[in-house]
Each structure stands twice: as C-alpha cells, then as structure tokens.
Length: 65
Image (cartoon, rainbow, N blue to C red; front, side):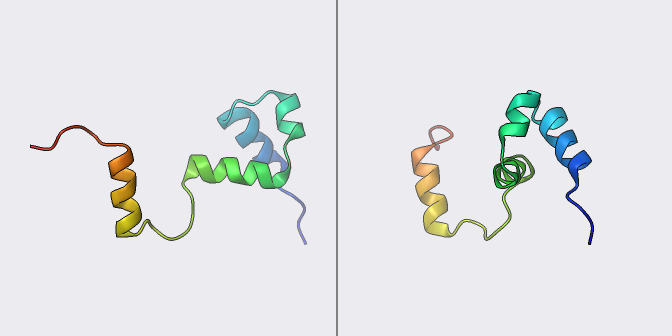
C-alpha cells in the first residue's frame, strides 16, 4: 500500500491554488479534493437539458437575434 501523495497535494495546494502554508495545512483531504475538482472539472454526469436551460436563463450571454 502506498502512502498519501503529499508532494502532489502540496504542489497543487501551494503551487496551483497558491494557498498559504497555513491555509493548506488547515484543509482536510476532502476539501483539497473538492478544490481539485473545481479546478480540473467536476467528474460526473453532464447537465441535463432542463438544468442547462435553467442555467442559461439565469446567466444569459446577451440578447439573441
């Protein structure tokens, strides 16, 4: 069994997210994983048609012509 990939976690947290060391070490692994999903793209099912239309209605790009 291999250990937790601390060097990868630290590189992501400190280098990519640019967290302070205090903020990084205060995070739980689950919080760091959620931050990773936010940056790398959330894994899971794509939006359904109704959800996409609701999102587009809330955040329109501009008037359609």
